[in-house]
Length: 113
Image 1: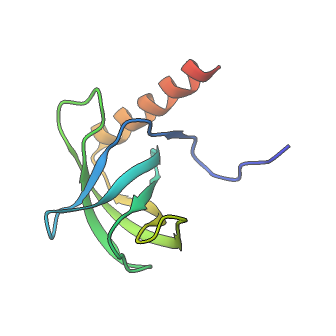
Image 2 (image 1 turned 180 degrees about the vertical axis):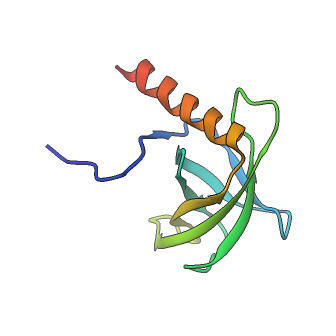
Image 3 (image 1 turned 90 degrees about the vertical axis):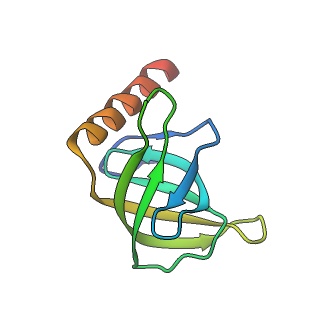
C-alpha cells in the first residue's frame, strides 16, 4: 500500500483548466490537481523554482475566476517536450476561494467512493 504523505486531500482536475500568470496575462499551463493548500500545474511555459507567482484560473461550477498567490516549490520535466510538472503551495487565497476548493475536493472524494 502506498502512503500519501500530503497534508491536504487533493482532487485530479479532469476538465482542461488553463492557468494564467496575471503579471503577463499569458496561459502558462493547465491544472493537474488541486487541494486547499496547493496545486499541481502541467506547465507549458518555463517557470523559475522558488519563485512567487500570481495565478488565475476558473474552476467548473464557480462563477468567478480564482486569483491566488503561489510559491513554486518544485518542477520536473514531463515526458512531453516543452512541458513540466510544477508543484505550488498557496500563499494568498481568499477565504471563500479556499472554502470552495475544500468543498470541490470533498465532492470528488464522495463521487469516487
